Length: 210
Image (cartoon, rainbow, N blue to C red; front, side, top):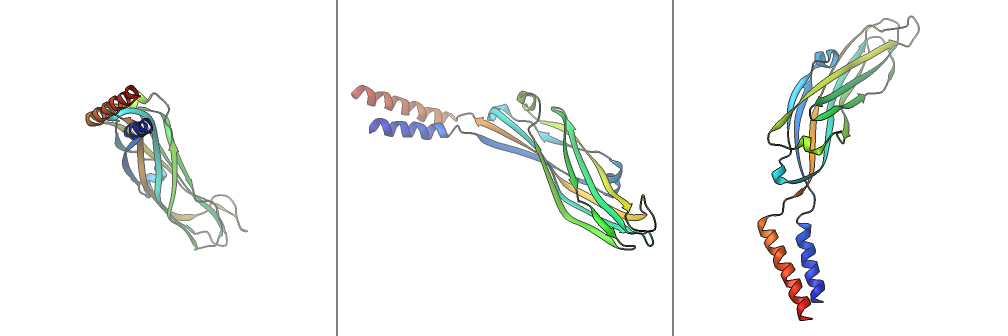
């Protein structure tokens, strides 16, 4: 029974070194001009401080948390089809390649002349386990990222009286977050190591008495 109790104590101490998580994020926002022309934004994310422990995993999330848009058909006697797309592309060392979040509103069909369709507060999330060595994400300070956004409304004629690209007015914007999440095994604190040592000594004494 005493051995069992000692093992339970040791198990509790071992759990103190279980996996932990730290994260950092940078916001982005693109206006209607940027979403059409692809003007990039920049930001920085924290590197993982190896003093915290042993890095075991990295995940990067690209979240478009607020996508908005309005499309108005201006062509007389022609119905329109339209869809809003927004692509956020994140790159920057130590990320190998890029991380892409592709938002698509789906197709709005048969929009009459002088009628509008709206996208309001829609969202999209993409996550990736980055390629490359975990050690590339370790250090003190930050690393820089480039956030590129492209897309906009695409419309075409769908009714009688014409075909091809539709004449329309449109507006769109998107905002969100790029987040990096580090999983690691913490370095045991000195007090924890002392208690663990006492537990091992206690277990040894129990065995010797038997």
